[in-house]
Every structure is written in C-alpha cells, then in structure tokens.
Length: 263
Image 1 (cartoon, rainbow, N blue to C red):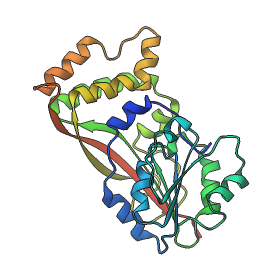
Image 2: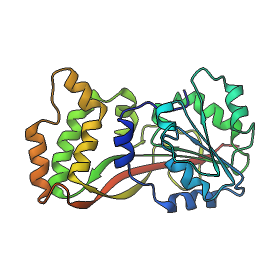
Image 3: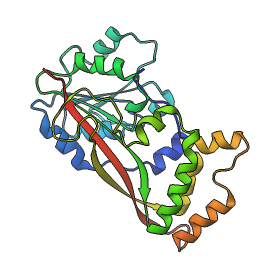
C-alpha cells in the first residue's frame, strides 16, 4: 500500500497539524542536482507538496484517501492524484513519471502506514539515479511547559495500547526502528533519525480538540474507557494556567530520514 490511513477527523487534523518549516524543503532541494519532478506520497492536505513545489517544476501528490485529497490546497505546480490500492505497480510508476524520473520523493507523517518493501521497490524504480533523494519524516510528542508535558506524557502513554501497530512500532520509537535501506545524505540514517522541532501557536481549546480527534481516544471510548475524562481535562486546564483561548508556542518533536538508492 502506498497511501495513508485516517487516524484523525480530517478537518480537525488540518487545523492542528503543524506547519513543516520551509528550511526543510530548502535543505532537501539542495541535495538533488535536478529540480524537474518531485513526488509527495500520502500527501493528505498537500502541505508538504506545496512546500516542495517552491523548488521543483512539478510535484505529483498522491494519496489513497479521497477525503484528504478533497481538502487539499490547490497549487499550479502540484497535481493531485488518487492512487487506489487496486492500482498495479506499472500503472503507478507510469502515473508518477516513469522509471528514473523523480528527483525528490517526500513522505510526511505517513510512511509508517505503507507496505515498506513494496513502497521501497517503487522508490527504487522511479527515483533518478544518480542524484534522486527520498525523505520521510514524522512528529509525535509535543512540549508546552514542564507541568503540561508531564500530564501529556501520562495521557500519551494511556493511548499506546489503542494505537495501531504501525504507530507503536515505528512512530512511538521516533522512526529509530523503521527499516530504511538507503544511503544516507546527511539528514538521518537507518536507526539514527535526525531529530527536529516544529513550532506552532495553539490554544488549549485547540489542543483538546485535537486530542478528542485521536483515533485511540474514540476506540477506547467505544470500549467504555474515557481516556480524556473530565479529570484529565481539568489537569490540562490547571497546567495551562491561563484562559483556554490564550495562544502559546507548542513544540512538536519531529524526526527525519533521508537517503538515495545505493549503487
């Protein structure tokens, strides 16, 4: 599978999802000698695709999730394409641009859902050789203040049994356990992802809305367990120490792996 699986209600996800720093795209673009074609896989709302488009003539942005694609932000250099799981490899390779055609492949907060061996085989076919780069990244934890962070860790730990296996195995481990059989280009390597930070201004109301959209919260609730109980919410409110609508800097902890096909 080359696409994303929904863990969040799409509109809520778009509101609270952090904005990836522009310098990430600049650093990646500096690694590829050509800037003709990029492929953003599991594009979701298109955030990474639009960032990449500032450096490449055309970006193909694909996803298996039509609900996300319908909310994607239009851009003249970004072409959004639905890639259903029924599409075969040759069709996908042709749709993207053909063998040895893609200068940069990006996967933002999605690669852990993929059939990795299958995806990597497609990457090896379409990525330009030499010079093409694959970059995958994700974020998981957030930091606000010592008191808030302590409560968040307890809440986060309570979600763990209800997250899908892919999140427990790869995302919760900061991609340290994610197979990544590519030659490092200096931005993380297999077993040693590059740690990064993303800053976003959020209110506590916005954070709680995001928490309530988490799949594990709703899965647990369907089993009679309220992980975001009034007591838990009250703890977050006390730790916020201010109006629930007041906006603060929230730091998302992120991590990246980037590489090229081994010769």
